[in-house]
Image (tube, rainbow, N blue to C red; front, top):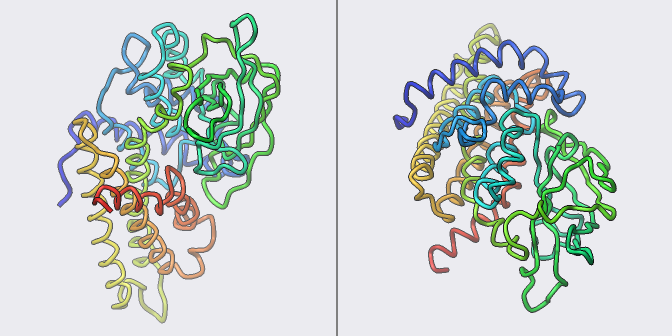
Length: 385
């Protein structure tokens, strides 16, 4: 029943990825999880393969593709193999739209070639200790110097995906004093080069999942940021942050649907091989019923995600639609993966089995990109409630 959303180019890309994963990722992925991130040079390999620059315009060294379907294939193939590409998704799927929409021509020529090659890895720093989803309460401050040539940045950020290895970080900071009458005003986005004096990576946070993706605390102490590194207009940061939310939430939905499909594949293979009471686990009626339920949920999630993907490529995916697909696919993935882990018995709790890693990795999908409770609020608002 799955929609025909992929063409021959997507399938050729899929095979290239599958070969790359088998050769370059799967054999060493456990090492990445132990150290908390891939080696820095891995991102240059992704750049050479063309993965990072698919949607970067050709004049800046990319492939110039407008479709998001190649990103969807990447998510499906990494999930299928039970691996990740570290911080690929934040870099390519979350940050690129900001640079494409708001960067000046000079900034694009300065940053996008390295973005596509993997020589410049990026992160975005919004969340602060004590702010969580309340971005209007951001306390990090950036004051323009007397000569107007740079901002002086001070503050701290937490839960920053890719912060430890990034070369360029989009930092949301308050450039005008806090106004309780308009809490969203006065926020700007500064592109901070991590080689800057006063920038520091603090703790690398230990997560229950996504072990091959670094998440860090960052601090900024009198960091001088040239005015040429202001993204877009000063004071417009809050509105900028909302423009890419549909794609961000679609990315999460696509990843969740792909993870659910991978869990079904892992569990189906396991129950055929695992013997209990003298016969394969697959022979028991409960196993068949559970996997039938999972197969149905997986297909429903894939259909929903595929439809949202088509709408996104057509420029028609609304904020409410993105909230719906994010809500449904992440909740469905949680249910499916939990059932598939149960079918593994005790081995499902051992991290050498991919189902255990999927279980831990997928849990956060109901939190980041806006919690699922926030998604319900958005959907309810679209209903006039």
